[in-house]
Length: 239
Picture 1 (cartoon, rainbow, N blue to C red):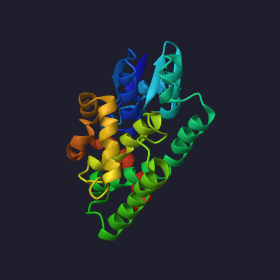
Picture 2: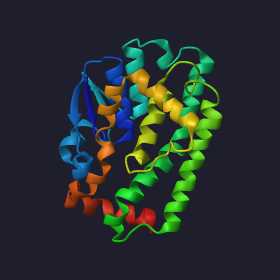
Picture 3: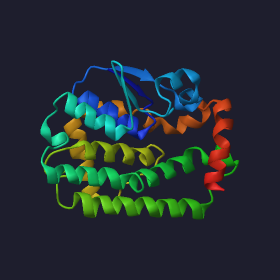
Picture 4: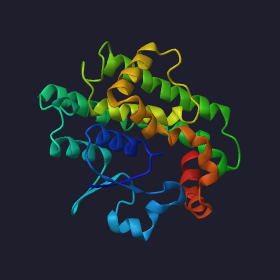
């Protein structure tokens, strides 16, 4: 199995973490997002989507992180708690995975873009009102994660970890990497983070998040050509 990844990406981290936890042998194929490698012709031969993560299992190529996660669980016959066969538990995982795209993922990603790329793309600091609004949206998602998905459970679907927890943690670490401490004043969220870390292993958790925790170095590593290619879309998004 080959996994095409850049651990700056939240979906890539979730795929990397699960593959490691399940001890699935794979070759790490680094795709440098900062240099626009994913947009090049060579990577286009791997996936016409030109996005990461991508899994290549012999001749079978699969995109989309949640599809890859489920594939790995099923093919490698992972313990049932990762993606339960029981209908209601699996429905809860799918509920979270459906919700997070336009909530926790969208809002955490926006914080990352505003803090890391906005000054480069727009030539000025982020206006305070724009950042305040983004933080309000992120906090709303975090509160929903706590109050609806976690409630008083150890993990998102109950007393055992699942792919939902892996995905959620990967998303939360995106704003954390920019210096936003989302755990302050949230003891329930903090306790859940500690349980997830313990389940995957402290060293593996550090390995998976080492790159994002150095996010402050990203602006100086972005290729100028890639930067110019991204500018029009970014400026349209935040103008």
